Image 1: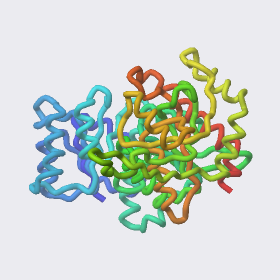
Image 2: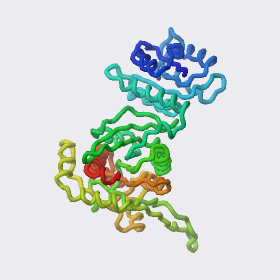
Image 3: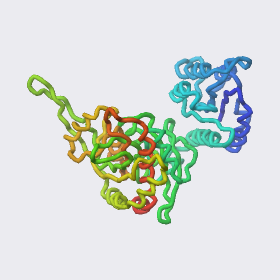
Length: 406
């Protein structure tokens, strides 16, 4: 296995190189260069399994560093034919937040972007997981190396949704690839004496299509017994309040149907396909709904910014392909189900992927209300909603996970 590292601060890789050698990657197969010009020389001659590329790097060893040089190299590798394309590319930077524009381009052209830290080895673990996947996938069929969790969790957003899931005390590990596109965090927790294995990820973008594809990948690769979605949604005023957690039962695509001729005009003829959760899931969530002590504890733990003690609401949740902000659309969707309690963009995609799978895992979505899809919507309720969603998922799985997985 050959690895090329392009970085003008090569001393920081002193922590990574011994770990690679422990994995039987020979030091002679690891090339380190400090400029884009030197990288091009290497990439003209050798085929690398992995390229580790710093976002800020100079064109020549003596010149100033710039993200544009590394972006130019990525573009050349992606679109050109003069250089030998590596099997995978991992970006690395010391400050993701400070390199927002460049990191977005890196995320498009690379496998993953890792944030370097001088104070911990999380970045080393992430790269080692990537190398491990490359080595194993070259020598063994995927089914021989797969880790099969009991519970798979998918979120539509990395922040704040997956971020809140990863705050749960579930022994999370550094993310690892399960194929050439999807990375998951593995963890475990105990439910009534039984260890439950869990994997979590977020979709590459918002919407039903992305969530359905990501869910299908997780189901086929990981073969979980349960797949769950948690995160944020819009609620129906009068039936929900900020932070309330909705169990989507059923979920459907509120835009499914066709436009038909009606005299001199046309109208949209609705044809919703509604998918319910299993009674096994609904019954156990109903038990939590009555536990005001636990819901109050969730409220208290959040701190003084918590707006209210959340409720658990079980009811119809409609999915659509666009963010809603005019308020009127919710009134129109109510015609499809008079008990509508919320609207969002992904849950039906997860349900449809799980419903079509064989074997079929149990599936459910716990989405918390962050706004009411009207002109007054704001993002300040998102963190509380993401927190309550993850917290109720924790409560459900730690209290009843041994029954649900059985």
